[in-house]
Image 1 (cartoon, rainbow, N blue to C red):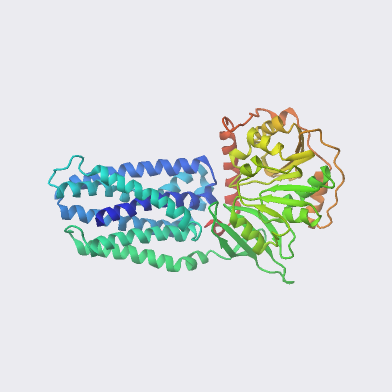
Image 2: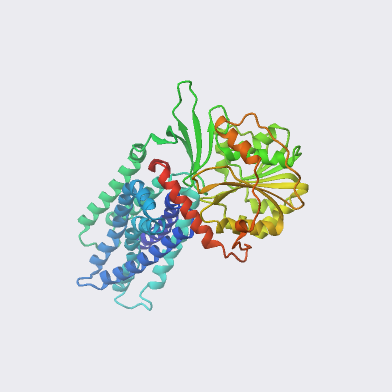
Length: 532
C-alpha cells in the first residue's frame, strides 16, 4: 500500500511542478504560447526518458525486489535535490536566459526546472510495475501497469488541485516549489522508515533521503534571507524594497516601496507578472501617464458623464478619480488580490465604487445598465488576453454603451511591428466604427501606450480638458497628445485581420510583438523584481 501512496504523491508533485513552472517563468518570459510549448515539450520528453530509464533499471542485472525497491525509493530524493538546486540558480540564471533569447531561453528554463525531477518521478512507474510483477512471480495479466498508471494519474489530478487552491494563493512560487521538494524527500524517508518490501542498501537510501529533506528544509528556512540578498534594488532613479506580496491565481502581486526622499516622500509600485502596472506617490497621486490620459479622454468626449464602467481595477486610481467627480462608477476585476492591493495600499474606497469580482467578458454579457463611458484597461502579462480583443467581445461591450456613449481603451502599440495593432483596429471597427486614436510623443520608444476612443455613432468634437493635478513630468505630454489625434489611415490598418472567438489568424503577430516587449522589460528591470 505504501508504494502506491508514494506513487500517488509523486504523481501529484509532477503536475504541481509543471503548474508552478508556468508561474515562475512568466515574469521572465511573459505569458505566451512559447512558455507552454516549452513546458509541455520538456515535460513529455522528460516523461518519455523517465519511463525508458525506469524500464532499463527494472530489467538490468541484479534487478531483485530489494534492488528495485531501492531504486524506487531513491527517485523522489533525486527529484527533491534537483528542485532545490533549480531554486538556488533560477533567480540569477533566468534573467540572463531571457535577455539572450526569449524562446530558446524559455526552453532552457524549462529544462532547469523540470527535466531531472520529471525524469526521476516518471521512472517510478515502470519500477513499481516491476516490483508488482516480481512479487506475483510473473502471474499478473498486465504486470500491474493499469493500477500503477491509474494511481499516478489520479495523483497528478490531486497535485493540480492542491497547487492551484492550496499552494499558489498562500505561498510564493519559490516557497511552493521548495515545498514540493520537501514532500518528495519525505516520500523517500517514508520508504526507508517503513519499507513495504526488503530494501537493498537501505542505509544509503536513507542518507540520500535525509540529505534531500535537509536541503529542502534549509532552503525553506532561509528562503527570505536568500532572496532578500537581492534587495534593495535600483530602478527608475529610486531604491526599492518589497512592502507586501499578495498571492493570486493570476500572478503574484508585489507592492514595492521606494526609499523616502529628504522630505519623507516615497512612491509605490503595483507590480504583477513582471510588469509595472502603476506607480503612485505617497500622497496618492498617480505617477503613470495612462491614468490621466484615460480620464482626460473620457471627459473630452463625454464632458458630464453620469455613469462609467471601468474594466480592470489595478490600483483603482481611475475609478476613484471618476467617483470623485460625482460619476456613478462600476469596476470589474477578475483578480481579488487587485482589490486587496488597491484598498490597502492605494487609497481605493469600495464604498464609492461598485466592484464586480469576475471576468470582464462575463460581466459584459449580463450588463443591465447602459453607461456613458466604458474604460477598458485589461492586461494580463504582456497584453490583453485574446478573448478580450475579439469581435465578439466588442459586440458585448457595445451593448453596455448608452446613447452617445464612448469606450476608452488603454492599449500597447509596437511601432516597429504594426501588424499586431492593425488586427486590433480592424476588429474594433467592425463593432465600434467611429474611432479616435491618441499616442503620446515618445521619441526613440517603439512600444508605447496607445489610447483609443470608440463609439457606435459619430464621435463629437472633443472638448478641452484641463486636469490640474497631473504631475509636471506628464502635463505637457498629455496636453500635447490631446491636441493631436492620429488619423486612421491605410498604413495603420494594413494587413489587419478581423479576430473572432472562433478564428484568430493574428496570434503569431501578437505573440511576436509581446516577445519584443517582454525582452525590453527584462532588460530594464533588476532581477530582484522578477523573482516571484
